[in-house]
Image (cartoon, rainbow, N blue to C red; front, top):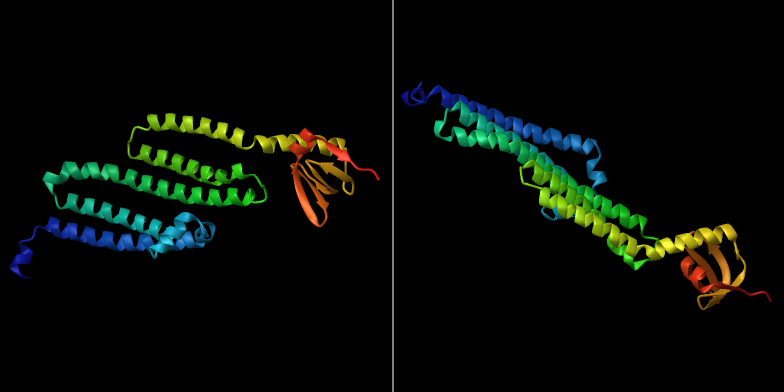
Length: 255
């Protein structure tokens, strides 16, 4: 064996072996996690979310990002262990701090990514649920739902890395109060229509097939549901909010 190899301390060889093993484990961890996430159906669940679309623009995916994060975590741990084995004394305190902080950083990043993906999915679900409701004020609810989830995820992530989150929690409380107030203002017409709809469905002052005049429109009642009344006239269908029916009154036309 060449003399220069013999001159290398055994700790260095051991550290290199640990690093090589870490590289292999990091690669295998990434591959296994990617396959597990695919088998769990994660790509289908997050398909169409804003985060996934952004990832696609960079020729990657959410699953690949999470898998790579797990690989980088294993690799970083391997580097720390290798440096410890190599007995790099002047960096001991630094690396011990990094070793304690690294898992929290990994969890924080993972929590934030999950929060963004879940927020995107919640936005899509809320938008889908509200698609049939013709109230412009409700158009911002999907975005509010999304950023509420992202805000909570960011709060948890910052807490993981030791950031003082008391001020953020106070902001979250203020945000929640503003959200409730906004929801009350945005849906007051919807709530009023629902209340009027309950009254109309219970009392049934008019029914399907009746000719009526309401809110300046005259036609034949086609449908009455919890929120709106549908009347048809001259080939046109008018959708009248029930709160307008309740407020303006309705005229039954008997001829």
